Length: 150
Image (cartoon, rainbow, N blue to C red):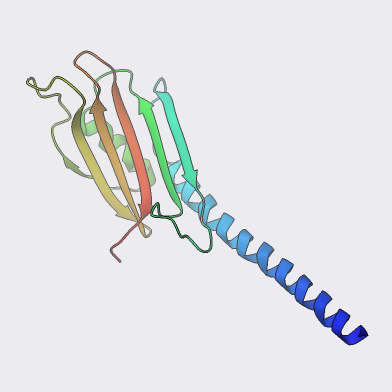
């Protein structure tokens, strides 16, 4: 009976230790991603609108990949292609930008003005500029998720 108790205690200690080791590794992956994203040069004066960080976890069973980051800001003026490039440069990202970052004259509602994409360190980065309506402040959305391409 003492041997069975010792084995049971050993298994419990091993399981708890494994949990903390895995959690530590998961937190390190998430911290590295957050650190990399924090290098983006968001201009002062831009108002944060949202910040979602989905940490690394084992297993990642959701359709939302992990780790991932989704952030949004309200710009204090019109955003240009050069603004996107300047935001991305300190993080070592070279964006492939689609769109002129200008609101089409014939669009009344929400419009996507431009989008920049880059891949670095196994992650897809996407910066998207949108406008809710003519004359409304533009918004910048950031999405970072594991890359599907090697």
